[in-house]
Image (cartoon, rainbow, N blue to C red; front, side, top):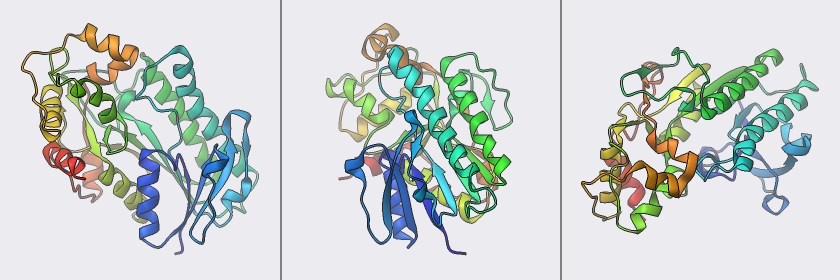
Length: 306
């Protein structure tokens, strides 16, 4: 079968990495962007304009598309002001609504058969004892839990159009270009890499290469439903920080950084570092996925390379 992709969030960290992977395999890609200066046209890669906030989209972006990878959404790895919190939720809902609304017009005619969507392990409550799988109860008490629950409810609407839906609950993405590592570079620049709080909170992570490969394999192997996109080996935060500092040739301090100092730096967003979430990747492994980066040491060493 001939595949053609539409990517939302294609200019972000995950999206840009994924597009390079898709193009390397010889497939064509359309992508959506709200910045007209980022629209490029070529034989295999073509950009189209959209403004999800105004519910505007160039519907030519769907021409010939068989698979959509929906990654759009305001970054959660920046300080959460009231405005940013509003945008974190609205950006996810508005982008999903405009895709659904537009595809609804072409129901029965559209070639789109499968949508692969980003979600987040933020749907799981913070816990030092629980191991979360895809069937774990998600109560939606915190801001992040509420965002992810509403987001996934919107994503499941695509089933009404006869499309298969895959949702990846993504952990902390280890990337050269951004995400949680860019945030953590702030304290390491001052050579104060150290555990935060008690340092015993579990961090469930994934390398950008494995995430990109996971998305591709879900398409080729028809993995539908919800999957945790995390490495099989979550680590405690004190180990995470120590190995990250080592990869940057920084020294990690044995004395923990008090929570109030991190809150001064990052505000409410600091829950991304304080929360403990041990998330299982058993379902994706049982589906046949093989991780390239099983251990966080390997991931950090890879990312530290020029």
